[in-house]
Image (cartoon, rainbow, N blue to C red; front, side):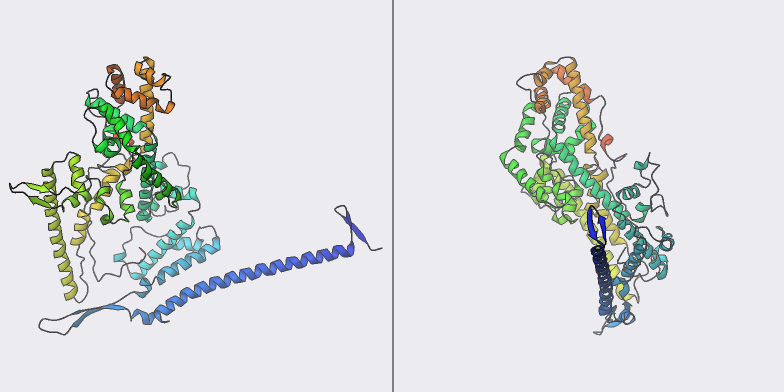
Length: 572
C-alpha cells in the first residue's frame, strides 16, 4: 500500500501530495515571469516616452541644437532718408532652448530621477544641497546667464516638490501658515519646508501662488457667507429694524455694522435698492413678496438644477440660487469674466465701482436749446440716479474722467513713439527701459482699484467674515428676546406664546412685523438698547485689522538695464 499522510483531516497519498506541491511551485514561477514581463513593459513605455520627447526636440532643431541656435532670429531693418533700400540695423538670435522649454524639460527630468530614489517627495541629500541656496532676493538682470539658470533650476525643482507633497494636507496647511497671525498658539508644529530663506518661506518663494490661493479662499468664503445670509432671516429682519429705529430717533447715530450692510447690499434688503424713510411696516413684506414671486422662484429653481449638475465648486455655489442675496463681489465678477472687464455687463456692475465710472464717462451727453446738459439714460445712469446721485454730478464726473482718459492716451502715444524711435535707430535695444506706459497702466487700471476696494477698501464685500456677522445677529436677537420676555412684553407674548402664531421658524419674523408697525414705544426702546450694547462696527467683522481708503495705486518703477535685455523667461 502506498505511503500516505493525514492533512486537514484527510488522508492524502505521498505521491499525490508531491504532485500538488510541484503544480503550485510551477504556478508561482509563472506568476513571477508575468510580473517580470509587466515590469519590462513599463520600463519600455517610459523609455519610449523619453525617446519621443527627445525626438520632438530633434525634429524642431533638425537634430542639431547648435545649428538651430543660429537659424532662429529677429532682424531690424531701416530705410535711410532718400533711399528705398532697407539696411539691416541689428540681428538678435532667439534662445531656442528657452523658447522650446528644453531647459525646463531637463529640470523636470532631474526632479523625476531624484524623486524615484526616495519615493517620499523629499529630495535626496545631494539634491537638497543643490537647491537649498535658492535666494528670493536674487537679481537675475545683474547675474550671468549661468547663475540665472542655476537659480531657476532650484526654483522649478523646489516648486515641483511642493506639488508632490499636496497629498499630505497637514504639511501643506502648515506650509501656508508659516509665520502668519494664525500661527499664534501653534508653536508645536514643525517649521515650514520653505524656511531656508525666510520664516515666511512659501509667501516669499511664490507670492503669485499664495495670492491666487488667498483670492480663491476669499471668493469661496464670500459665496458661502452670502448663501448663509440667504438661508437665515436674521440679516434682513435686523437691517429693517435698525433702519426704522434710526429713522425714528431711537438710535441717534447708525450702528456701523447694520448701516454698512444696508449700503453694501442695497438691492438685497430693500425694494429698488433704497432703504425706506417711512412706511416701515409695508416695506418689509413688499421685499419678501418680490423675492418669492413666481418669476423669481422659477429662475431660482432653474439655477439650482444647473448648480447640482455643475462639476466645479464655483458653479455649485453660484449666487443665482439665492432668493435675496445675489450680489457678486468684484473678485467673483472679474473671475467669471476671465479677468476681461469688457465681458462684464452693465447690469452686473455696482455703480460705485471704478469700472462703472469709466463706462459712465463714455455715456453720450447732449445739450438742449436752453444750454442745459443731459446724459443719456442708460442702465448705469438710471441706477446711479436711483441711488440719489444727481444728473449734473454724473455729468461733471464723466467729463472729468474723460479728460483724464484723453491725457492718459496722449502720454501713452508719446511714450510708444519714443520706444519705436529708439528701437529703429539704435544698433541694439535701448539701454534703459522706457517705463512711462507701464506707470500709466498701473495708475489707471480700474480692475486693480476695484479688486482692492472689494478686499480691503470702501466696498469690502470679500473682506467681511459673514459667519461671524451671523453669529453676532443670532446673539443680538436672543438678547432682544430675553429682555422682552423678562418684562412679559405684549409683543413678545403675541409672537412667541400665541396659539395662532406658534410656528417656531416664524416667531422672530412676527416679532419684527409687530415692531415695524411703530405702535409700541417700550418695545422699540428695549430693541434700541440692545442694538447699542455694544455698538457693533463693520471693522469688528472683517478679516483685516483695518480697511483702506486707498484711491490710488502707486506706479511701479521699472528697473534699469545696463545692456540688451535677455529674452523673457518662459517659466517665471
